[in-house]
Image (cartoon, rainbow, N blue to C red; front, side, top):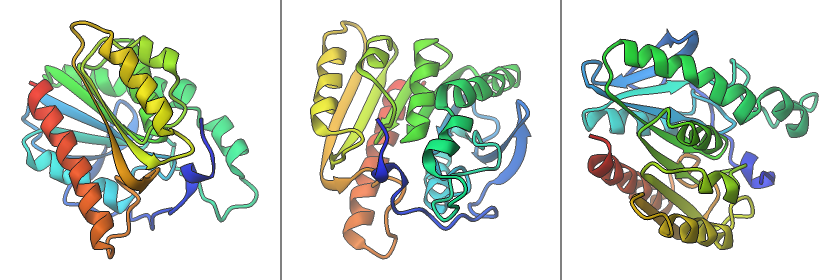
Length: 240
């Protein structure tokens, strides 16, 4: 459920990127953007490259501009995966950064802290590694709606355990989350009466296309922005 595509096109991280600011919530350094007075929070959970990725923060700012209070937590404890670090190959790195044991557990105090500040509903959006965290939160009903973009580590059994509104955006060229698996997820969700779902496969794009696109490539930007709009449309419909 993870592979080389999980780690392709690493971004140039920028700790000062975005129009928001970094602060702590629930003991976790997080990027905040959008309206702090909104009762509707959106957690945006990164891929293995972490919360300083410029395209991720840019998208967080776009979601925040739609009126939500957006939080992008550093669930990787300041250690995003670094493909250049031969001392920490992916199998060793992931042992210390499991999306369930570390990611989902670290998110629970964040959710509690947001609720204590008066937030009435929380959506969670996950990319690659972060999508597995979102599914764990969804299965525990700690969030009210979910969006997964090019997920990793997510199984059919995970999806069977989800009974909140969920959107899944996949890529046609994806060894991590192939279209066949996307279609199986879609069938499972379609059989759940009363659970709103939206599943879409984007043609001609690869795993990671929604946040690890080349900003100089007009076509890549266009397809990423289509996914971003689908995300915003889903939130507008189901995050109220």
